[in-house]
Amino acid sequence: SINYGVAGAAVRGNCPHRQLSPMAADGASPGVPDVTQLATLSEETVLENLQVRFAAGEIHTFTGNILLVVNPYRRLAIYDAAWMAPFKGVRINRAPPHVYAIAEEAYNRLRREGRSQAIVVSGESGAGKTETNKYLMRYLMWRAKSEESSGHLADAILQSNPILEAFGNAMTGRNHNSSRFGKFVKLHVGSRGRIEGAVVSTYLLEKSRVALHGPGERNYHIFYQLLAGSSPEERAALRLGGAARDYHYLAQGGAPSVPGVDDGEELACTRDAMDYVAIDAGDQKGVLRAVAALLHLGSLTFVPAGAEEVAAVEDPSALGPVEELLGIEGAARLLLERRIKVPGVDEVRVALTPRQAAGARDALARSTYELLFRWLTHAVNLALVDLTDIDLGTPAVGLLDVYGFEVFARNSFEQLCINLVNEKLHHFFLDFVFKAEARLCAEECVPAPGVSFQDNQGCVDLIEGAPSGILRLLDSQCITPQASDAKFCEEVNSHHAGSPFLAPPRLAAEAGARARQAPAAVFCVRHFAGEVAYAAEGFLQKNNDALDPHFRVALEASREPLVRELLGHAA
Image (cartoon, rainbow, N blue to C red; front, side, top):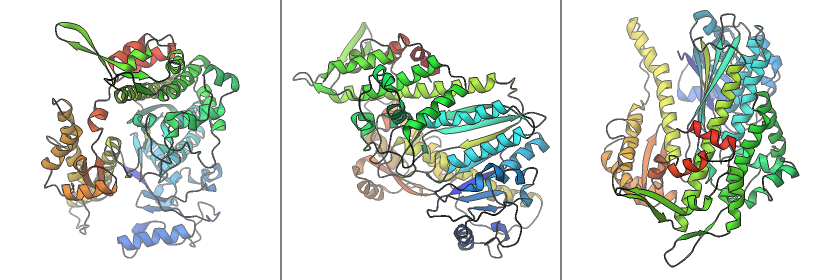
């Protein structure tokens, strides 16, 4: 059962944190450590209390047993190992506000009640959710070691982070290390209080980033790590000869570096982590060959080869590294034509235009990378399961790390999915904080003061509700003959014209103009965190973005063992 959460709030600024003992109770703490202790409770007093505490170096504040964390955007010593011991065995109502207090409460409740617990970390993009999850996991691993747990298992669980971050995190306009996937980690705790195993679940990888990202952003970290950290011999074997700006899939955002991060050193950390979770040398080599193949694939360009705009590869020799590293043959055929089955005819081959061929190239890259990410997640889980006789029925502490709410100059299908997740997480928060308390007061016949809040259930229904939520309309359009993104957008605006959670077409058009989108192809959702204008262009293609059957046949016949193995993780 989910009993509490950690909320991350993003407030930019420096935090000259006082180096006090976490258990100090000298009464000198600025503000109040729990907003429920405020004499007057309102939005203004809550924010003022957070501001006063932040200015004094206190970034954590309780509201009941929910923790509010204000991101200082710099490393603090308050998460060092020396700060862990004072929280051991301390109930949350006696502990100072801290991430470790939440982790200790989850661990203790599981031990006392014998039921699974979950810690939900929420906040906008860049609020610090991923870092907070790392601290939670480190504390739980430390706590487990104190109960004579397997130190090697605990270290292996922690070592899964660098792998998933290298392949699943990227630099965005809001965050230098943004998780572009959702992750749920279950840490199974045995009767003696030891961590006996772990299972990692990942979902909603932003695979479109492989082929497209915005100015000032980066592709996934592993691409830059490979270029910066591989030896001259490896670069020669992988046919890599340039810097990041020389590869189309990396140059779109200007190939910026991440401040304070050495990509070459990060590759060494990624390799060490793969060693630790027992991914053998042959598989590691296959993983990096696949990554390099995608860099070469993205650099293929197409030109018209006749009056009918039939596509041809501009430099046929550039196909060599792609075919060699993926272990496939006939890459040109895969990218330059489509084979369609027609009743009464074995197969019809249709030549693609240069634009369509570029689309096929990007589709192959997206699908291959997604399969690679699933394979890595599976490899991590195999290592964690093999280290112990894990009983998946034992209670577990779950750590949820999801995307933060996103709004960019251009918002597409990915942002709608991300923001739906955040709408549902916000709805859970409302249900837990307000609705559940109101129900409890009613059941116990206790008078409860009326607290006004905006219920976002209507926005959740607008996006996914039956029978005509936005995603259901999208599914319907995807199976409708002659459907288009523009028609889908018209359906959204007409079906939900009266919804308070959808801006009228005129306002949506204005929002689209600010985002440089054609008015007819924009719809605007009023989320709990603000209005977001979505450009409908590409929605149908992204919703249908399954692995092409002909790509599958080519990968199944690959000479590379790892590439063949990837197909076992296709959806």
